[in-house]
Amino acid sequence: MRLKALPVIKNKETALRVEVKLAKNKVKELEEELVRKTETYSKAPGIWNEFNTKLISVADIKTTTKKIAGVKTPVLEEVIFDVENYSIFNNPKWFAQGISIIKELGTIVLEKEFFTKKMELLSYARRKTTQKVNLYEKVQIPGYIDAIRKIKRFLEDEENLSKASQKIVKNRQQKQEANQ
Image 1 (cartoon, rainbow, N blue to C red):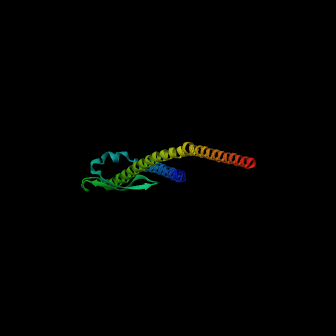
Image 2: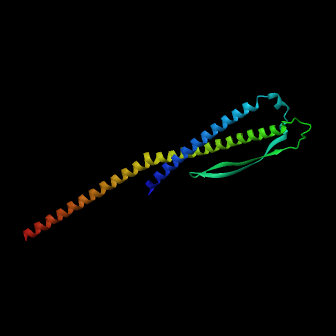
């Protein structure tokens, strides 16, 4: 019964390995996108000195969980930003675009954090699953095989002893019949 679990655990390990790799690739892709966009937007650093950072903040982060091979992982659904009211007449024209850029960069950073957490959770689960596979393959299955071998030998010995005692009884009966 236990040996039937091994293919299932191996499949889980494979699925987790694939998901860890996908999450790792997504984190790398988001890091590259963040660097690329930051470089693009940092070409005019003087402008960002004028920007009022109190205008925008993260109000809420909506998440769900998704099970991947039995492991609950967080999924970023939506980032809700709180934008303070500001005068479009007393501030530079580009403030609206600056707020949009901050929202975009903030979303990328949060998404990257979620994928990093997902990667960590899946990687931990994969390590534990690999340990289970190794336990089965290197400890339990050889133990079962050894136990089965011992049982077979014992049953063979019992059968041989039974046959030998039957022969002895048969020989005695034949001698008694011959003596009579």
